[in-house]
Image 1: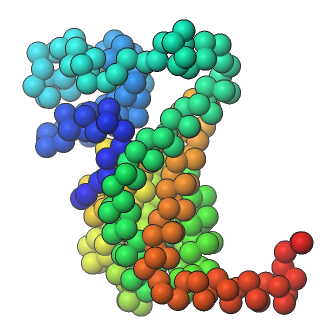
Image 2: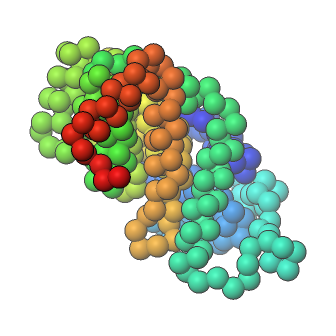
Amino acid sequence: MSTTTGSPADARLRALFEGRRLTPTQRRIAHCMVRRAAEMPYLSSVEVAELAGVSQPSVTRFAVALGFDGYPALRRRLREMVPAPADPSQGGERAETNSYQRAVEAEIDNLRRLADALADPEPVREAGRLLAASRPLPVLGLRAAAAQAHGFAYFAAKVHPDVRLLTEGGSMLHDRIDGARRAGAGGLLCFALPRHPKETVEALAHAQQEGLTVVTVADSAFAPVARVSDLLIPAAVGTGLAFDTACAPMLLGRVLLEAMCDGLPEAQARLEEFDVRAASRGLFAE
């Protein structure tokens, strides 16, 4: 599996975790730390455990698995790696904001991290080439990720000759993946967001077994789908509201569309053809 990098702090955290043989619980802690990198150096092991949904001893064992004497030593290392938050008196974040504003500001930060990751465009270009070449192109997204998959598939169908949207699980999901493979598909695009359905992981494992190259947009390089993805490009979700927000994954989907269009010489002609048909049918209010 290959992944893109995020902000410098995210990249340093991932470098700390990568190459380690982590248990699923420890991967969950690592995932939480990357998602909330700015907070981690200032949280106790109990607070980290609550955020990650694990026990406090699991956080201690995680620190030891990384080669530290315990969590305090890991936290000291994190403070060296992650910059301190901006001081509001020095022109940083506004001192007084409400919870709605903070949720929006957190999403803006997610978009900035995505922009930093796209400083190296090659992973997205590689994904675009894979998606453009797959005929048909299955696009998978279950539960919370269904909206992202649907949005991508809607626009992709305007330029790609055969897009197959997969947003329903159940016993037919593997059959539909098999059908796409028999029809000639070489790749599959997956959107995977928390909480990650087991069906998504199982479907991607099946797709790989059938010979499909799996490109995944996920909330973190440590998401459960990472081990069943050939190319994973992370885009963080916002966690400041009752339900996660997914502006960065949505925008990354549009970026992938752009990269896919670059690999489809007929894309512009298809768009122009659609505009002509839409005008003749009076589809849109002027």
